[in-house]
Length: 466
Image 1 (spheres, rainbow, N blue to C red):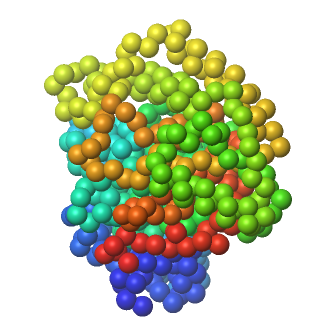
Image 2 (image 1 turned 90 degrees about the horizontal axis):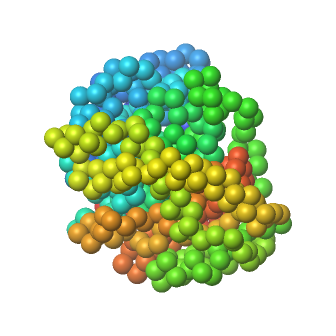
Image 3 (image 1 turned 135 degrees about the horizontal axis):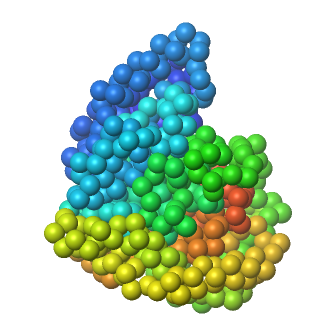
């Protein structure tokens, strides 16, 4: 198999090839490094590439696997990490030019888990500054190129923009992002891949640069549900360095993933929320509902006591207040080299009073209870992931956010899976969001797997990256 073809193989199949010794970790790592070298100058997905370190790790993995001492099914599989995730001694900028020389003094727990599985870190991927933005733009460090339009620069989705582009183009078989208001799901939508927003506490945030500690969640990004599930399986788990992970039992999603959706009750979003989506997005969404119904799911109507916009406003209030608390010294320093679109978003937290912040936390509990009542006996709520397909960068209104359908998942501490569900007439991907109750990641993955097993949208690749 040629190096180019290797980078088109799904991660779970790469695992099988490595474990059966049909390919070597060195051969595989070299294939990705060569592709990054050739294509990333335009794509701009990576902040740094650890070529020497990755090849050294690959040689070690090769020797270990050949000796019959593989540490697990992911041994030798490469991965990319968002530039919020600390690796001791490596630069971690959080997408900020002001932190361009910042070196990590520790390794994030989730990275430690992946490396312990024998995975090979290819490098760090670009992010919106401090992860505060859904369009995926970064004015000072550069915006990754959405590969679905080879001519015109479009929104890659953020804040995990580089991770989305790297996976979509085969620069990495999978990647890790973070999600505070949609930052895994938005790039998954616009880059045509699959992304999982996890319940708070499922995956440790220790060693991940924070945006809003109340809302932050890391999550896996890959081309398929099966790959996302495999990565989520090894990322999750209790961590004494992150108290939010305490008390949650380990939940392997693999045993139930292929059970299908027959008998499940899935809710369509309230009709009032349809007005925010474009015709192309709604058409793909409606086809997805029909497909899942054909597979045996029952599609039901629900009424919510609040609008998605109401929830999004409270979510943003918490994000702004907490991010300003974390980064106020930089935000208030007029000489600091900050993204001119991000600075005012975080600076808005300066005006949020303690009363307003506590009210947002109080209403979170109220709305959680309202949502639980509305979704009682229902397995998931289905929505589009984004309101439109990726728009040209020169048409972005930075005063608005694209996270209408995603922020409620963070505020209510739900889990959600985003996956490709069609294309617009101009060839841009659309995306379905499967929102499940807290700690029901396995169920979201089960629904997503059934959908992907009966469709082929996730198998499509951007033009020039087939």
